[in-house]
Length: 334
Ligand SMILES: Cc1cc2nc3c(=O)[nH]c(=O)nc-3n(C[C@H](O)[C@H](O)[C@H](O)COP(=O)(O)O)c2cc1C
Image (cartoon, rainbow, N blue to C red; front, side):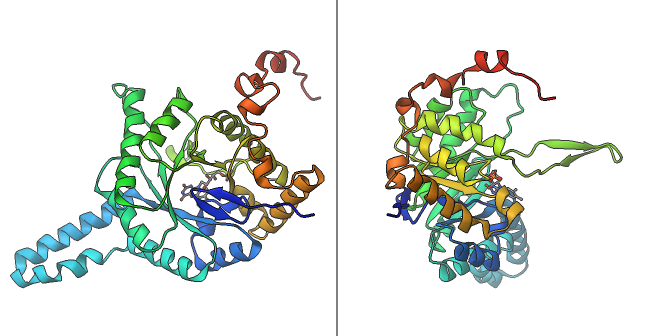
C-alpha cells in the first residue's frame, strides 16, 4: 500500500511536501521545467527586491517629468511608460511564462523591508497569475532607538499592506531571531498572514583582507541548520492555524520526515538542490514515502505534527533541548 503524500499549503492542495524554495534555480523556465519533471509539488520564484521596484519607479518618474516638461502631449505616453519596467517587467514575464508552462503552483516572492508603495507590486504579481505570494522581510535593525515592538510592527504592517492589495494567500518568510517568536507569529496571523516560512537565512558579511572591503558571503546550508526550524515549527504547530513551511538545512529525506513529524506542511529545498542537482527531488520524494511506509504511516496528514510540542512525550526537549545534559555529557572526538 502506498502512502497518501498530499498536503495542504496556503489553502493549496499539493501532491507532496517537497517544494523548490526561492533561488536562481527557480529563476528561469528551463530550470523550472526540470524541477517539475523531477517532481516538485510547487515552486517559489526568486525574490523581486524592493530596490529593483523602487529604482524602476524612480527612473520612470524622472523620465515622465522630463517628457511632461518638454511636450504637453507626452502626458499621453504616460501609461505605456509606466508599464515599462525592466527588473519588475522581466519578473512578470517569468511569472507568466512559468504559469503557462507548469502545472504545479507558482509562488512569487517579494523581498524588502520598508513600508512603501513598492508593496503594491504584489497586485501585479497576482494579476500575472501568482498562486500565492511569499513576502521575505529582510530587515536588519541597527538603530538603538528602535524597539523590538517597532520592528515587529513593521513586519505586521507590511503583511497587512500586501494582504490589502491581493486576494491570493500570503506567506511571510521570517528569520528566527525574535525575542518572542510565538507572540510575533500571532501578530503576523492577526495581520492576515496565511503562512510562515521558517526560516530565512541571513547573509552574514565577511571581510576581504586583501582589499579591506566588506564582502557578502553566501554559503550553502548544512543539515545542522535543520534544528532551528525543527524546534520552532514543533512549538508553533499547535498554536497557529497558519500554514508552516520549513526552510533551512533540508538535505536528506530524513530531514524532511523530521520536519513533517513536528508539523511542517511543506519542506522547501534550495542548497541541497544546488549540491545534488534538481533531479535530486525525485529521490527525496521517493525516500520520504518509503520512510513513511516502512514506519506504518498511511498519509502525510497522519504523520504531520505527530511529534509537535504538545504531542511530544517530552516536550521540554523542544524548549531547552535537554541543554544541561547535552553539554555536561559531551565528549570531544579524537
Ligand atoms: C543562491 C541562493 C539564492 C537565494 N535567493 C533567495 C531569494 O531570492 N529569495 C528568498 O526568499 N530566498 C532566497 N534564498 C534562500 C533560500 O530560499 C532558502 O530559504 C535558504 O537557502 C535556506 O534553505 P536551504 O537550507 O535549503 O538552502 C537563496 C538561497 C541561495 C543559496
